[in-house]
Length: 251
Image (cartoon, rainbow, N blue to C red; front, top):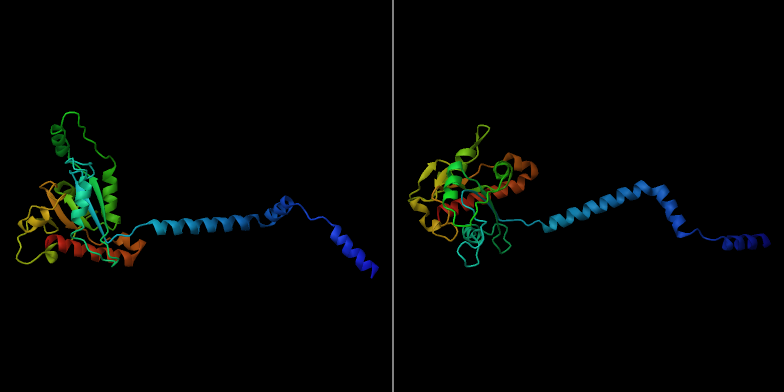
């Protein structure tokens, strides 16, 4: 019995190791386990935050041409050309996801031929500069091939340059999306001029009315590259785009 008491007393008198020493010991034995665990936690948190912040749109529309809708408050009324254009395009979009709001992503590229650049320089007002966005060519072709921006509003110069890619047509015939009895002015079978009599009402909308007379309405062919990211999402975006093209041509 005396021996047992001595054992208990000895155990009680043994000091616990300092916290730092215990942490060092834990780190020594579980260093890589801890690193992997922390990495996985951070990865999950970052991905979750990105998914929450990434907005999903009903429709994706691309404009590329000599008009710059990003210029601010061209008419002095506090509304940018981009805002006008976006607001008018929402009229032909729909609430495809059923959340009670029409959301639209509009991306624009300033793309000008040498002749258009020279003409723009001649028409500059005193003190005004022509700001061209370099690198748009690379971004534009990437958007035309890989992205979900299927509804395209393009200048003739952009269309002529990018109507095919490696011998494959990038746009689809528009006749199936037209309204019977209306008069459409075809640039090609895959591009309809904005100046068509059939598009008079659409062309009169704020922002749309500012677009140059060489503007074309097009529908990109479905991208097989976008299928690799998400085939179901890509198919849905493409079907939505077809409805928007039908709405534009029938507005």
